[in-house]
Image (cartoon, rainbow, N blue to C red; front, side, top):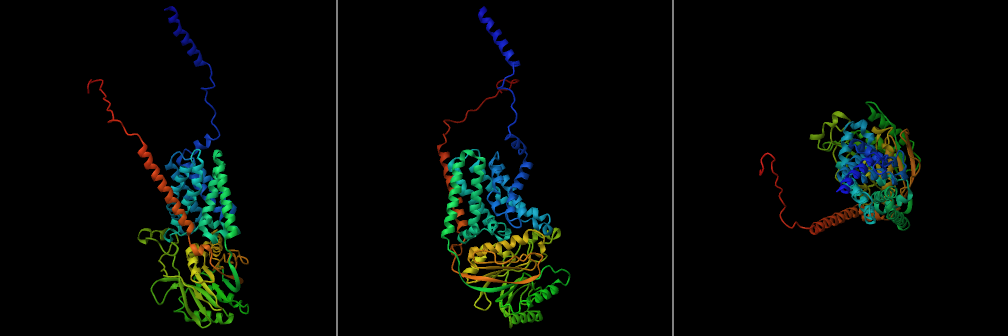
Length: 557
């Protein structure tokens, strides 16, 4: 009894002593370096701002900065942020915020025209990346397995292409800022564009970003990431070696007339006078076609035979047809049209193409009854322009057939592909961008023609009112200098002609279709996996037990 009674006292003394002796196991440790950013990002607002900034980074790969190499790592911070999200819902928010930043950065030059509505558009389009952010976390959260990394290298680029496919709908703004378009000045990338268009370039760029993100943030999964990079390099090299090259078999001389900025209430008449003056400088230069920019004629030539006669006189003097662009209310049908009109030595030839895909808010307002208020906060279209119904290939003489497009339409690869299928020897784009002087928009727009030329194996002429004007050969290579926004001139370009059919023209948007199949296969696999887990889950042995709680004041109740 005595000994038994002393043991609790000894235990009490020991526990009391231990309570006052410092212990390394119980002492609070200093916060690790990795926990500091995690705590800082715990705020939803701060995390959303960081995601928006990360999403904006890819814009540096596009003109004007044109850091093409940056595109291959620009998504890494965004991917790293989404994979670290605590929940799938938070990862979706990271995707949405990053998409908002990407869209706002790519369209920042719209701010003077649309003001606050630019943020609304960016927020709506940014929502397309919410599922993509959740996908990033689904595949790359924590320490992904080799199978997850391999799946991410296919599913995440496919998800990105799915977003670009949705954005390609003209009503949502069109495919401006497709990630693959950032590679317009890289010769190997242009060769790949002839195989799978800008879609294939976007897929490869995202795949490289995913692999780099895994290399940087998940050491245990580096081997499958390296394997993905090696496979991408091998596929790119194979396409470089085996993809067909355009067969060059001739040359034509095409002149671009860029009048420069002309303002004032009588700008339409003065711009026409300037274009006429510049075109007369081409007399004796043996040109095959003369191209004026978008809205180069502000009057319907059916109502202004005097203007049509002056253009015909220029055609006779230079020996070449003149392709002008009329932006006016038509005399033969109601409404305002933007039309490519061909004028020869005898006047109007009858060849006319009416612009089919209009710029949202710039040339028409979608759902005007709901969104018409945009005209009160910016420079949105006061009246909707009318659309054309079909593309046109024009015979401009000298055996030369050209396929015209107007401004915004050069962002759509299907339009240039269809013109090539219809027999166009040269693609021609008439643009303005005069509203967006001193921004990145003119350079971004001019770069798209390089991609369209490489995709189709046809040279492309991009003629503008105020710059940037540019001409590209059938492989997408630049011919001669760009005509910048400070130029008012007429310049003749020797344009090589090429024939043959590129894989992209033959097979169309197959990378986008393949991406949809990959996404469908993944969804089917996930669905089957979920069903299997539900079947394997143990069933309860009996009805759930009910716990009876008694009230202390009323026992039994």
